[in-house]
Length: 236
Length: 172
Image (cartoon, rainbow over all chains, first blue to last red; front, top):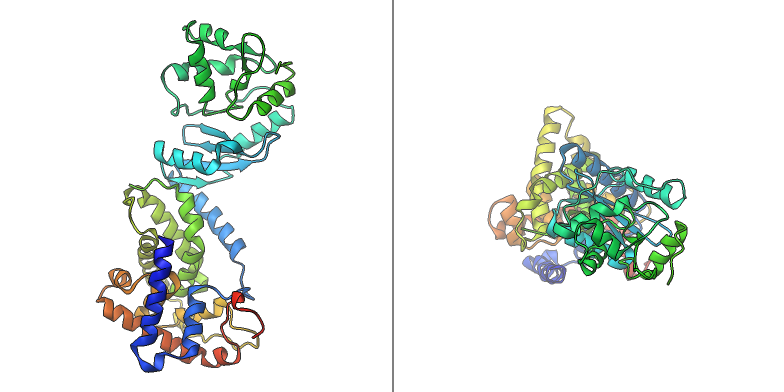
């Protein structure tokens, strides 16, 4: 689209210059170029700061009308950048950097709503609780969760996981039994691998029966680090 | 229906829409025009067809919102010439982008709109005509007249300090 517009623009610049003889001055070409792209650096320019202030204003106005159906922000964590996305119902998605935040947002736009706005204010309480957790001052999360991205058996697994306390682990088989389907051990693995709310919903506390850690959507290194941080003594 | 996150639209088009708003309503009301434009866009975002030209859609919204703002300003009885008829201040340095946009804001309505939508945004004359009404030929004429008027107004400035982009090299 952008390429097309550029081409369109180049031809129309020529058109304008060619319409009347006295339009074909160098001053016009310079003027038209300056109109198309700002001459920079502008002595009065404060565009980045101005645009940031305008964005904050848009966030407030959108929140007041309930138009930001998904509000998100990114935070730094010991496990890399984390994406936090929330709906009016609660936290709907936590994503590691290796999941590709842009792709995660595109998926949210498709599955939930394209009315997605970066809004640090609306996700501030989530960021605060995660910061407390990473600093060792919080052992469980007290947040409304929007579980619409998980359903059926996977959802019942996701609902069970917060009952595994900080610093403890359960095996995939134990989780299967706890959710009433003792034979569904592999399905528990799938449920953990597709957990839309890692860390907050602690799928990292589910390990293999022999105590080795198993897969993790944030990478096995992150799972190991999380379990060690919680003092769970995992085995590779 | 479109499925691109709205934030992507804000990041991609926010700077251009700000320049358009400055050119349409002047610097003082540009923030209001920008905010109204993106808030309206967010309201109607779920009705935007997936194959729509997002830039043309945003221009249409900015066009309507700025007309509203200019009308509201007139009702508040703030003298319009305060913004419109103030010539770009003489300066020794190169003509800045804000000076240029201020000069566009001082053009008559249709010239101002045609110059903003065709030259600032890069919409073809047919699209501009759809937004401002009239024929594509009339839109082309308005844009051409607008550039001519700008050149006359900014003539001295452009002669002493050519409007060069930094990529063309500085200090020419």
